[in-house]
Image 1 (cartoon, rainbow, N blue to C red):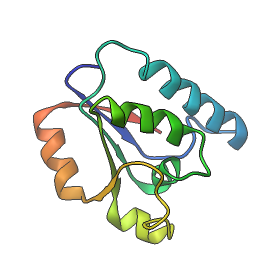
Image 2 (image 1 turned 180 degrees about the vertical axis):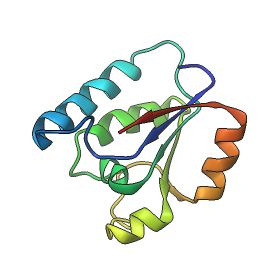
Image 3 (image 1 turned 90 degrees about the vertical axis):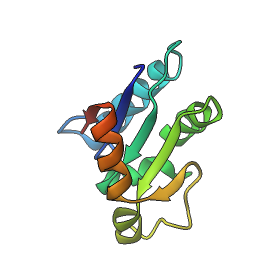
Image 4 (image 1 turned 45 degrees about the horizontal axis):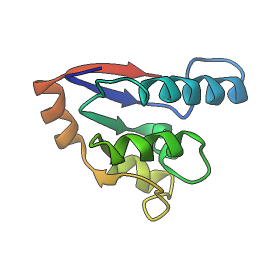
Length: 112
């Protein structure tokens, strides 16, 4: 994961059963946080911003990654749309411009 930015564009991984998708996404981050080399940042957009709230088990893993120096960022437009800007349990509000800067500098791994 070294030198990568993870783009989270949904609060579930894959299409199909919502609960399954949420569990698969949580498993993904459970494994990522255990790696020796962590990503530079996690940028959440669209319903991916919901993973940064207390209502998502993913937020626990993101918090642990943040404590290890990974930037956890939420798209402001998306957080405002889902009305979670003031409900984030982890990370900070950012913008698409910051994501574009990260994408220009690092490899992007998209999770959707």
